[in-house]
Structures are given as C-alpha cells and as structure tokens.
Length: 355
Image (cartoon, rainbow, N blue to C red; front, side, top):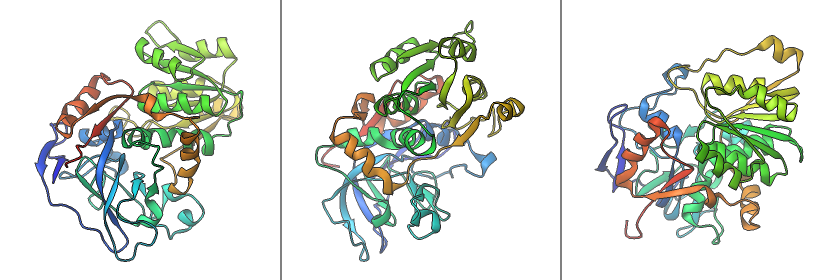
C-alpha cells in the first residue's frame, strides 16, 4: 500500500510502498477514506517535541485524523465488524486504566498517539491499524461523510473537549480565540454552537472573515500596531474564556492578559522550537485575578457521541471548515505550505475508492 513516510525532519515526506497492516487480536484495520492534514503533523515533520520527549521517530507514517471502513477484524474484537464506518481518535487509549474507565481515555496512562509513535503508524496511508478497537473506534452515522469526519479530526474534537469539558463555559460568555487556523476556527464554530459570544484574533484578514462566517461576533486584526489584550479589554471588559490555538509565546501571553478576573485560559496550540515547551507567564497577576490555566488534549472516545448528535442535528458542521481536498501525493507540499501559514481552514486527504 502507499503511505507518506517521514525520512528526514523538514524534508518532503516520502510517498512509498509499505506493507499492509494486519489486526492484532483486539484491533481492526480500516481502509482509509479520508484523513485531515493538521498542524500537529507539521510539528512532527519538523522534528519538534524533543524537549518533551515527544519527538516523532524517523520512519514514521504520519497522519492522525482518519475516517474509513473496516476491512479486517481481530479475533477478540466484539463491537466492530467488517464494513463498519468508523472514525479514530489520535489519542488511543487501552480502555483498562483508571483514566479510561472514568471517561478520560485521552490521557490513558498506557496510551499511544496515532501517527506519532512507532507503535501506531498513521493514516497518511491506504490502510490503518486501530488498536483496542472496542474502546477507540467510533461508529459513524451514514449521514456523516468521510471528508466531514476527517474535518472533525483532532482539531474539532480538541476544540469541543476544551470548551465543553475542560472550561466552565456558560452560554453568553465571551470566548477569545487567538489564531484562526484549523483548531482556532474549530473553536470559533464550537463556542458559537455552545451559545457563547466569540472574538477571533489573527494576523490574516481573510482568516478573520472565515471566523465571522463560522460565528465570530467580533474580530481583532493582530497587526504590529494592535495591542491585542488592551483591545479586547476595552471592547468587552475582558474575555471569560480565552484559547491559545497557535502555541507561540505571544499568543499564550495575549490569551492570559485579555481575560477578566476569574477568567479561564485554555492551551491548545503546541510550541515550536522557539519556545521549546516553555512560556513565561505573569503568575503574580494570575494569582491576584484568580486566572485558571487549563491544558486540553484531544477528546475521550467515550464522549464522541455528544459531537455526533450535534452533527446529526446540524448544530455543528465541520465540513464548513474544509477548504481543500488533496491526494496523498500532495501531502508533502501541503505540509510545506504550513511553514508560512499559507493554508486556510482544514485540508483533507481524500483517498480514491479503488485504493
């Protein structure tokens, strides 16, 4: 089968023939129908993460936002059958630890990350193995297309988990979103669907226009003359919840500084080699204003049903964020386009029916 393989950090992924996976006793193999192209793939391609013991190994098949149809089933799998349409979370739990059993499988103590670890080859490939399938595989309604589900990907579920489960969000609250790439635009759309008011921040006016289309009530163009926190404080009196969807020191600090007292900052963006996982924070001011700092990673597979119900009711439409569908051969160029933030919204690899 064809797959996109990391052979050297920062150099184009190699599109090559690799062996097809076979299911372990508790796993299934899916024929990949679509897979999102995420900035986390870009981080992996660049070799980021060594500062957190999280660097993707050379030889890895990248890709972690797949949807597809099951073509092989392990002998001990109970709830998944051949022909089932499923989505796969990137944060794969084993289903047995206390975190999994209590609904927090996204931080499973023995979990692995699809597309980022040798034990979990990714979904820029025509076939993908899904371990612990009874726990991880998410059945898809027939009404949800593979491209739409790939658009849901890690960005949409991460944004949903951040706002619906991690932050204490109340309808009518103001949510600031710093960075309107895939996860930022997802957060705008999710916050709007959950009844919040949204102010979106970005350097790119076109991305702010997309944010408005997805539900942003206010926008801030973060050019060199704009003090983002002061602008948000002046307009709103501060945000109740603020998300750093980019992961650089400036957006993280702006997110915290734009909050009103007792506000909540949620960190979604991962840092680059400029920050190497460390950002200086105004801890005294955060203490005096009772600011909460929250991390959020993916979403437990046991809670995907919440999102799927919202999709079926058209309360959420991740397909609105999909701006481009490409072939597997185009993945190396689309990752390179992220070097200068040249992509917009969510791009998805669509695999041919004959793959």
